[in-house]
Image (tube, rainbow, N blue to C red; front, top):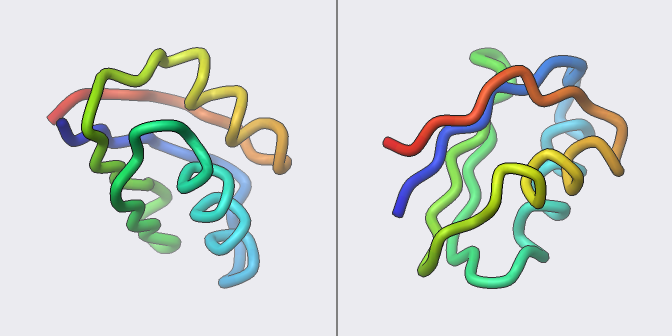
Length: 71
């Protein structure tokens, strides 16, 4: 399953690293790719992830989730 997460508040490589680390720690996540300039993250997961779980992980490191979609 692939999930695209639209994120506001990232402005540098460190921001992207924080989001990558936070999402990588979620259970079942096999790959995370953050596109800083496009303001989104792509998550590859072995199972379904709850939107609240994704949102909480990103908000805990200081960024805002503005949309989540399964692609």
